Each structure stands twice: as C-alpha cells, then as structure tokens.
Length: 527
Image (cartoon, rainbow, N blue to C red; front, side):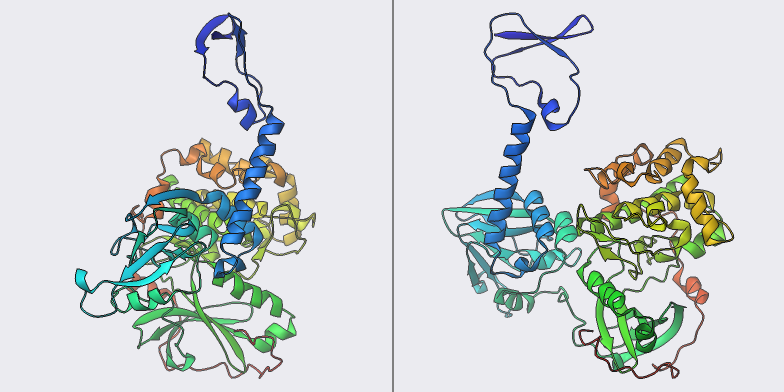
C-alpha cells in the first residue's frame, strides 16, 4: 500500500501503511501544498477539520471542568474563569510510581503540582538541627491539593520540603514556573507544612512586609511626582531595604472622582509577580493619603537615558524591548492591558534590566471584549482609542511599535505641537512616517506590523499573541531564555552613586504634605 507525493510534475516521496498526511490542513486553514496519488488500491481513514476542532474543543472543556472540580475547595478556586482555562491548557499530566521524589528539598523551584490522583507525602524538618533521622511527615496530601508554589514565588528560592509519591500511582498536573508566574503569580498559604519547613529555611517568607508600619519608614529623597502626589525613596532600617513610596492625596482623588482607578491600580499590581514589572509589596492609608510601597528602581527611567544619549544601538534597543515584551506577555496572559506604555514608565534596576511601572490606566479586558475609555499619552495612543471605536489588548502593541521607533531614532513617529495634530498623524498611519536609512530593515518591518491601523491585523493580536513578536526576524538571534534567567549582560549598567544625584530632594525624617485635606469617606478601607 503505497502513495506518492507529486509536486509540479516530480515524485517527491512515497508513503505507506500507518503513515499520516494532511495534518497541516487540519491544524491551520491552508491550501494543499502537494498532490496525493494512489498507485495501488488503498483504504484510508480521514478526519475533517471541523470534526478535529470539535473533538479538540470537547477535550479542552473536559480538562477545564476537571481542573475546576480539583481546585473547588482551594484558594485556586478564586482565579478568574479565563485564567483557569489557560492553566488547564498550559498544565501537563505527570505520572509517578510509589516512592518517587516529585520534589526534593534544596532544589530550586521550577514546577507547581496539583494532585489529580493518588496521595503524596510531604516531609521535612520541624526546626531542629536537620539530619535525615529528624525528617518528619508534615502532611499527607490527596486529590485536589497542590504543592511547590512557594519556591516559585521568590526567584531562585529552594524547596524547603520533599514531596514523595505515597500511593502506588500518583498523577499530577504540572505547571512550569514561567506559566505559573504569568497565570497565577501568588497563592495564599494554606498548608501547615509551609510554616514548619520555613523555620529551617534561609529563604525569606513570601510576605515579609506584612507587619511593616508607615511610621517605620524614613524618607531619603524625592523621586518624582504624579497627578495625585509624590514618589519618595524610603528605607526601612528593620528590614534593611530601600523602597519607592507612592504617596497619593485622597482629597484630590475624590475631587477628581478617581477612586475606582486607584483601587484598580492597587488590585492589578497585587496580581503581578514578574521580573519585568515593578512589584507592589504592600499598601498604607491614613486620614490624608493612600500609599503604595513599591520596588525601587534607581537606574533612571528610559526617558531620561534616551534624552541624554539621543538614540540606542540596535542591540541595546532590542534588549530593552525584549524586557518590555516579557512584561506585556505576563500582563496579557492575565487579561491586563497597560494602556500607557511609554519611556517614562520604563525604569532600570541596578542590573540595567528594564521594569514596567505606573498602572494608573491599566484595566482588565477579557478575550473578545472591548472598552471605550479614552486614556493614555497622545504620542503613544492607538487610533482606535482616539477615535473611540472600542479597544482591547492590541493598543499595547501599537505603543510597543511607537516605542521601538523612538528607541532607535530618538523621537516619536507621531509627535506635534498639539494633541489634535498628533491624532491626525496617527490616522494617517505609520506608512506616512519617514524612516531613517540607518534603521534596520527588520526593525522597520516590525514597527509597521505593530503600528497596523486595523487592530485585528496588528502583530501580537493574532492567536499566537506575543509569540509572534518574539518570533519576528528582528529578534532572530535574541536569546529569550537568557533574558528571563537574567543571563544577558546589558550594555548599560547604572552607576547608582552617580544616578542617585539625578533625583532632587534631601534626607530627613518622614513628613506629610501639610496642604492635603483630611478625607474620611471610607472609599479606601481596603488599602
């Protein structure tokens, strides 16, 4: 039983019993690339594309349903339905026989496990001097329980316990760290074994800031200002750490009716745990202000750096854009749209790596839905926002294209003396913008794909999402794995002693803005 492929009159290859042909046509709606000719009598089985996708949909719904039942009585049940669907898609089944170590104490955390079948023993130490004879059974976990999350929530953290298959067969749903970070991020501690194991662990607890008080913080210098207040560099002597404290006036927030936006900014930041996004550690409030205690990045903003250097080399721009792409991928997996991507909101940490900040315009937009809020910075606003046609995640990709152009050339492709003129330039489109001859051809193509007028055909908005940006020719030799692991050496590493002089202000005890009025309406009770 043999068939031949024939393409343009030539015999390309022969297939025989048991082989498969035509799978590309099922996966993707594409034309046949070859002709299949029977040279002997044959019997074939065939599967229509519609039947394949229907069956695939049934299996997906079954996986989602199983996952929801598994985690129904756990903290994971509070995840958004769309997020649970993505977890079900990303997780893989792993099977273990009795006595197999699923996790070993001391290993760097790489995988999160949910038990689908069987039982798992969690063993570790009770805080006394560790030795094999002191190891205790901390918990016997069964179907629906999960483990391994704590070491994933602190980069480079090591497991503080062993997880051993206790029944004859154990089946777990496994989620790799990268997918865990994007989809889940942080889970409240449920198991007692975490507390026992942590007593002998050198790893900091996930939330060492819970008992931190505002009165403990010492103001070191002024870092900048925003619509509702100021940002200060502060220190906690007890923790031996520096932070950025965003202090916002409650009276101004209420006067401008922005309470919902401030609450949403806090809630979105609390969901995020990424190496490429500024972390929120905790919040405070008093009679006049609400506060966000943030990760501090003293390596300057990309705006001040570009202003000083005028433009960046192709390789350096690619590194910064790569960091931003990782941040956007993380956010979009959580259905978060930033809506204010610009140089001022990109900060460098002490390593020279870029982090995205300022989530004042960020919102959650579910797949297939749109919102009509007019927001953003004019030079970076996608045309569908200014036209108020309804927008979604695609607006972040438009801003990304604008940013790439700016990093390589030192100026925005859409800029003018007034906002109205800027919007007219965006309507004219990226094809009306002159590109300098010095700009890399593949970078030009990427910018044009990202700044596509039609948001439905904009790069990043197809079914592969951010993966299409990563796979673009401009990133051909870029090592995304090295970027995520912090193994790329940036061309520019901040000199923090010098860069700190860029921030005005002076050291002194913590003090409050005396012009702020007392505001006691209670909208901030959850801060």
